[in-house]
Length: 119
Image (cartoon, rainbow, N blue to C red):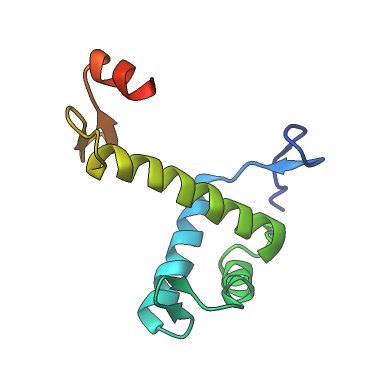
């Protein structure tokens, strides 16, 4: 049985650390929902999509114990936040000097560019 990793930090009593395979299955579930179109809306997903994600995750990772709320909902918020940060680095008003390196799958910049961005 795969026991979820938890860590006592943050506001809540326990915070769940997602594993790589759990993230991969979450992306897979969301992409399947987009491709099928059942829960697709103009700027995201229709209400109730989290329950569908939970069902898909239960099939693909039966012993993970992942629930729509709070696990999947909070993970999606974190992924959206991280995506927006990277997107702004590459496409925002202060993008000079940033580049995405597909081989390393990361954003690269000179030290001076990073320092200017962080201020």
